[in-house]
Image 1 (cartoon, helix red, strand yellow):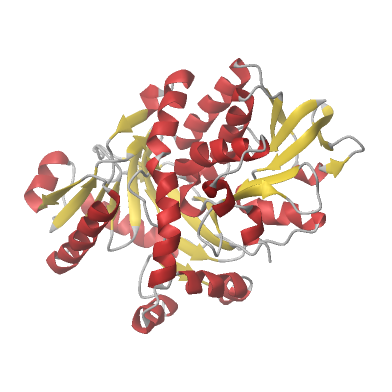
Image 2 (spheres, rainbow, N blue to C red):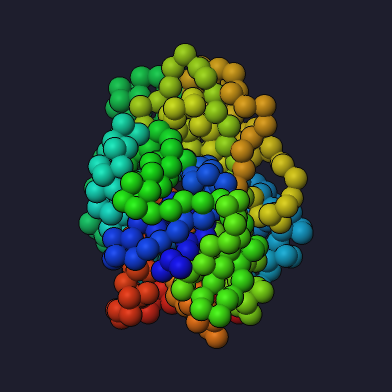
Length: 411
């Protein structure tokens, strides 16, 4: 019998397995697919060391109406998507009020400050340095007024959290990104970020490191999880595997996996899409065009064009509307070339109403732990909260463990 089974081999689950292994535990990492092939794969390729504040919903009535009317490409929704998570959305909206959001951000920023420092030794140990480029993420604005407003807010973030930016006017941006053909009023270069040319590949490298250190990776479905007399069992391709404890790190599938064990967690699911394109020229660093809320990232597979958020049920059909606008804007920016894939990739970001990831033991289920709810930043924060979870499972106590306690997210 192993000490721990971690279910879910995305960034959060894989780094959880590594953190527990580093504490001397015998750990099994299990997923229905190969490591890094689900939500983590679809990331825009940025370790966002600048993202000190979680995304808030607008509380201004005019902005809420614009969002509801679909006037902004950042968010699309369907009636079924909104009604199906109405309670979670209302709680999320309540936590978007300025005073509440500031209090949440003070906790959130503690996690984000550690992100690059936690990834760096793993990248080195996994031999994944060829996938990474330090100091890399830019946002651009077409209009001068919107750029000026964004720069003022960025300077507030710099003053509050002590991060580093560089403001670029249109000419300076054209010099650092000579492939751009569109003219921008200005851009912000966020210096505390790392760019990744293959997010799924980085997770796979971390999983290979886990195996090289003696861990076991296997194929198994979380739906087979059952309690045994001495612990927990999952059944996979090679038969049953048992452990004294199990961690559910299944991203957006975690609430459904918890439900049979009596735990209900409201979640806001934000779907995102991407496609790759093979053009003659590309970008040096990931770049967000704020007018269409799309991130264009240079990847191994081509230039990845990734969208904002779509509020739909997880089983909803593909809706290319946001991606169509993003692709059209990208074609204005440079020679985009043909799409690599016939159909877009899509995945769901697991956003909790409290805006913080959660971790902890499930009430009345000894040995069953959960670690999820990172929203847009699972790729960034996985190694950070993995260390916190490992400390909690070792019986340690701290303010940050208490702040991220799973019980805060339970209905």
